[in-house]
Length: 209
Image (cartoon, rainbow, N blue to C red):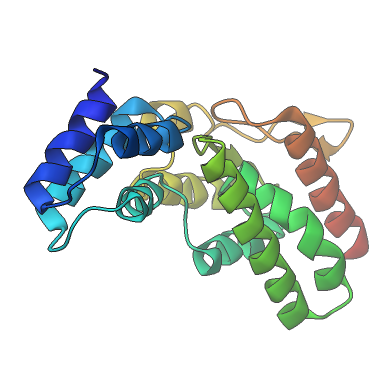
């Protein structure tokens, strides 16, 4: 018996859920897209928190709450900060991808429309990532202003998104090449997403000159 199946059986019994072995196996199969340790943590929360019979939705809800992804509103605030070419901000692939969709609307001056487009795209992207069991990956996007860099990196560290030892390595002056800012990544963000984000910030730079 796998650890997940064993955990499901225990929590089902504790919460009074009468689940057959086939039902438990179906739940295990649905949860197999997520990392084992994440599922076990979610099951522990179910055992402590539930006042009703456990369902698959209870486990998935706690998996999503614990995957480190911000809400759509929190993500939009990060995206707005990321559109400032001078600012150093902490981003992830979900936010960067949704930024690409919202950016043209934002550039047209429709901030409300951009926010709505971002939220819709972000929620869709996050839902797909969660269904595929993808872990969230954060990195620091380095802006032009060296004085703003420390504050941006510190914010990422204090939120628990960036490791302090890796972030401290980014404190020297920004890397330049041909007068264009290079985005420095923490972790291993998708190269295509990173290049799109770089192009977005460079386009913003040209339009504000």
